[in-house]
Image (cartoon, rainbow, N blue to C red; front, side):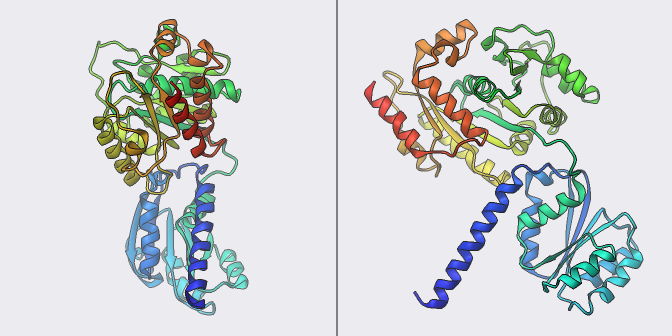
Length: 425
């Protein structure tokens, strides 16, 4: 390898590492509010960055338009059209000429419109002059997607706003794989292990089992929240929640068939917004379905966990789910995978290694089939850690709780230990 190739490779790796760090910082960023943004790009590089921004879940409420051209194109367009909330301008103008070129745009810009300039020159004097003249931010090429997102958040997200809680959605690759049981045990584990206020929301309105698993019989729950979004606030939410333990509250499903539960794509978004503002952690038990509203929920949460059993139908569905979610959430980590009911007697199975290879992912947990432990817990309205706190399965749920809340990295050794445990059975 030549010196030039070596330096180029090292520079590229350094940039990728720096972007990965900045992407991690964006994980806790609040979604941007409902604003209009118009971007004027003079390079394909910035256009690609902005297209990547447009696919980010934190931009779901943003109306984004991308146009080829620079400052002159923006001034010409807005001479006869109202300006948006934010204009992002790419320019190759020199430091000496930049303010002069911006003058025609300033003459037609609405006073409330914010402007971000992306230029070529790293000049502190120029930066100060632009800020003095009302420019919100000056950025130097090359800029990455996290840089643009952070700049928009600085302008439009209230720095004094309360941080949003973390949201984790569990969904089964197939019906009957135990995704709800895993979600309920993880919610219980998170609330107990970290003494963190946690809300478990059962989104399976006709058939939800969270109330049964926690031996509760609430008269109100998530149906009242979904069907009356205009009433949703902290007080109304508090009336709908059922206390399951010291730090765990349940937003239960009615689990009755007195109506058809058909929802539009954004039906659950007001509920999720209120939940995230009122609890550090929200666990969502998402039914095995693929509709506009389930897509919307899975696309907007912080973490997605796919639960599957080791057979061919589960493998196909898990692969489809992984591919769809990676496309929907291009700037987020891949969904987590949990293999459940592994080692069921007399059932032909796909080995964990063969199951995970086409998914290109390592499972965060492999849970052995244990009909006695899970059956007894379910019939008693108790969680696994309550039934047998020293069992390997209880320890597995503890590890999952750490991983999905970001308190521990995924370790391959954990998988090996579980596989060894299975082999000893």
